[in-house]
Image 1 (cartoon, each protein chain N blue to C red):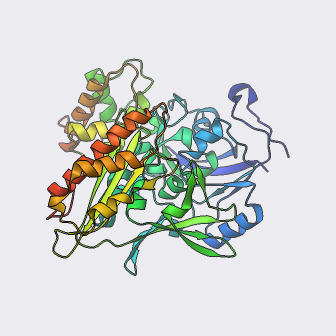
Image 2: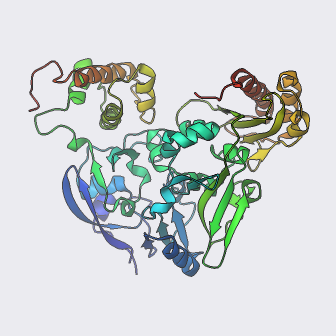
Image 3: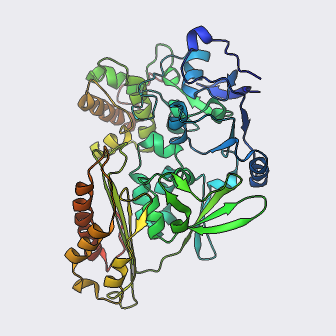
Length: 310
Length: 167
């Protein structure tokens, strides 16, 4: 059936299209999975729409149908369950920013969410959308990786738990299949002695796509001096968010106060593979990566002995 | 199949509107409901001219599909103040000269309204963050910030220090 527009004279705009299009807004996950198994390739899942609709109205692709997740309540919940933090895919950046539990246990994720876009964008944009959109510059991706996130993918046939590292395979590319739905993000609860730093570099504060981001999460041993584990994750410096694993070898088992911050910064600079784009050159990103790594280590050095808050 | 009817409450009135699966909420508000106080600037969620309050949240109506707003409660600039009675925020904008070309003003006022609903005593940084999704190409930000401070001041002293004119 063809769309007919009653108001063509007034409302004739280039983005109006003529393909028939279905709109689904189910109440239950099971219903959504059934719709996906039937129409998987033809329909697009819509969460907040803050990335998707910009691409859609730019006509990067045609859409034959929408699966709107807004009515599925359980996808909007943040809860602690069996010593894990479970975040529904439809949780907005504003919800992440305002959640007391996220602030207490995952401050790096909270800071990243608070730095996204603007109030208008944070109120609509979701954690699931940020993940599935898989932009190398996605602000939540490096913090999620740093907190060892796993993604619960559902389809009618199977349930899968995939690590952030396996999930992203290229710029805007993931392993998500057409019949699959990202339902939840699962984070292991960090120990008491976990410290973090979030640094986002961009040309302005609001509404900027990151030139580079760093999420550094350090877990101390029981003596609160020796590094037990560390995850150094960056965005906008490679086709996917990445962890610099070489930093682990240099930090784990060492006394934090005896670390060579400059050397660690150099490792980060050497191990990233940024490109030139409108937001910054390769050289700029390499220089800045080193400096923000040093800054993040200094911030943790300053804060530890007490949890980082604001 | 691509047409559908949605129901929403806009500025306190329930409306049923026939729309399509590719219509933006912004166009539904302007073209179907003829509420042209909501403006289109960039169409990419960056300028805030299309800002409305939907389900108690500040949003960019250019980045919402009309069917996504099915069942929603929406306030546009036409729903702020009533008839000849301006909202204290609108009065403050006029008094401080915070309106130049006026194109950003509806969005700015809605952003200010939402900010003051959540925080009646915002400091300057909080005001700036509250309106960070709204661009003023006349660059009259200082007066806009002054206006929001003035409105906050009046709203936080119970009757606004100016009698019970809103009664």
